[in-house]
Image 1 (cartoon, rainbow, N blue to C red):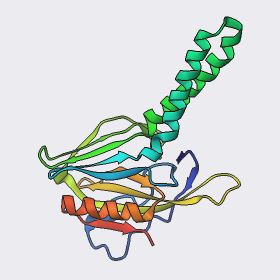
Image 2 (spheres, rainbow, N blue to C red; image 1 turned 45 degrees about the vertical axis):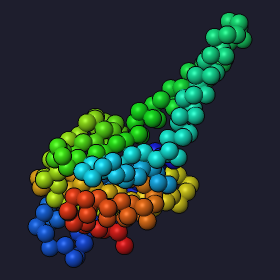
Image 3 (cartoon, helix red, strand yellow; image 1 turned 90 degrees about the horizontal axis):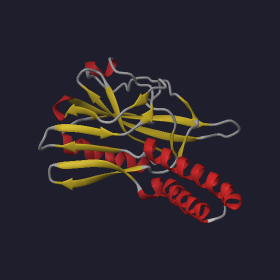
Image 4 (tube, one colour; image 1 turned 180 degrees about the vertical axis):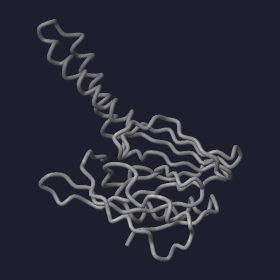
Length: 208
């Protein structure tokens, strides 16, 4: 599940093995706040010329259940008498709103299409600057310079937190776009490798 925990940024140092001049121009700090402890997205091949990141079923299961439960409680409240239905209506609306807002902000889809030569990301989230990222974000595949892998510690009060990992696109103009952000190192490495082969781009790793 996604969390709103406070993140602890790593040192942001450039891997010593990188000699590409662009590596010294980009940021090596985390690009997004928080993260998921489990695998929140997966890379799916749609065809020979298209590949995309999609939210996993497990990631959206709870908010979907909250949304559906809210609808059921609202329905029950509407069918009840006025005095008996106020409580269920309020509870149902709250549950529906929480589930809907969660899905609205956290579901994501990042598409890499070789036929059109375009990358498109559809997601709404709060970035590290506290600004709302609005969909869609687009870029030419030819402008993608490399893939960046970062590690960060996500923690809250009274807990040791957990490790989380980012997979970011690095563009020729030194800008970055995040395409994966979760705590499963094995899967994010495998997805990064698959995407790197698909795009023909190198992976810049800062994960020990």
